[in-house]
Image (cartoon, rainbow, N blue to C red; front, side):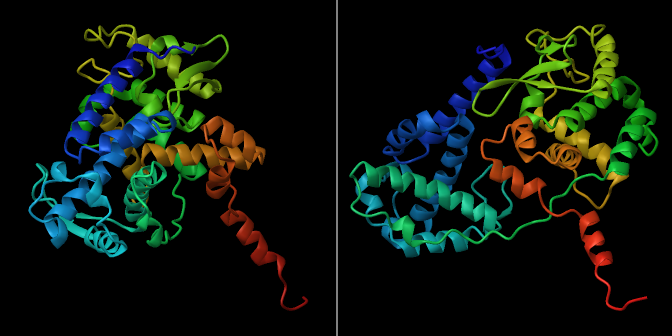
Length: 354
């Protein structure tokens, strides 16, 4: 159980290559920073930090007078000492709405409070590293406040919407004629995938990496590779088991392309179902049964967490099953007062005696 599956190894190699490519776009001293944070961060965290730092250093060299005429790769550690709090504040204002004309995708990009907070956290992490190492005599990022993040309502499916979603996958009602032509080939796969999301609360990244050999139907359980590469054993109920077994009978008749032989969920091209394909699959069905809610795989995870907490009242169990390292994260999302309790509170207060 300690050794990751080949898919995880392959994906990790791709991520390492991706990170090294991003680092080449950054000032040379950033390579030391990424080596320093490697022991306590995941590869995906470092990649995202790389993207955010690339955006920041591009902004400095393109729009801040003190750094114009240079490329990010020309910056030296001494240049960090020239950066002031006002430059960070200007950057945060800039990324509220900016044009990515130099990017292949192009177009306008906007950032809300959470997006700005994430980018500032990446810059803070970088400056903190060099401050601790003695390269900087002050950490000016501490002078800039993290943008206040406004709480958003947790979006999830209601009990009746879950039933409607699974019914839709089974009968195909509401799908377009084009979608129905493919639905007969993907129905069992889609039902197994959505049932697994709703019945176990796994992350989309965990779902993508699932292999047939990860499952033990004698114990109704399966191995999953969590964030950070740790592996855990999760369990599922009879509804999930039935959907998986039905799909696997069909799956055994498919001859996957080389390299995808053990993949649990396959595309019609007989490859491992990708992250984007799973997102599109969920959205396709969810927008029919709940058009006003933007349901994603993560929202199905939220649906599972809410249902589990409602049934057990055990926030620590919910945190453990969902793989949260901090129970406060779980409590924030799932231990809020439900609408049912709010209605109960409204009925409990009598303004006049009958």
